[in-house]
Image 1 (tube, rainbow, N blue to C red):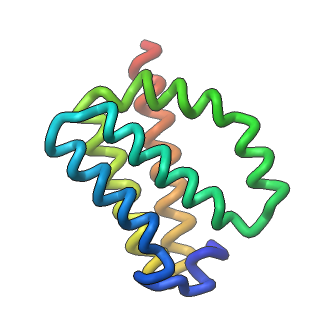
Image 2 (image 1 turned 30 degrees about the vertical axis):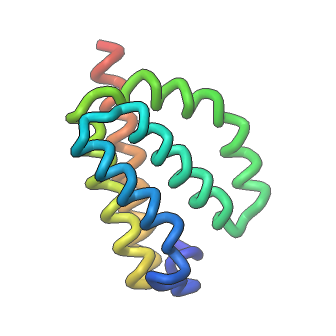
Length: 122
């Protein structure tokens, strides 16, 4: 929410957009490994922007879990498509300065990730 409300604009979000473009290209090429690398860069850029450093540190405690989940799920084209859709929505809301939309986009992205993991567990 705070990131969007700071109105970073397209230029301020260029590193996120570049990682997103790289994810899309890797997805089109069917390259899961490159998609994961670009996704890692997206997450690193995102985490660098979290204004609450205490929250960012708490999230980073689970970085190993996130890496495992990437390896476990992002090799599948259907999962990559869902991830791209969610992150594109997130970046669009950030560019628009829509804090409520960004919060909703992130919650939807996390919910999608949860559903993907639960499907694999079943």
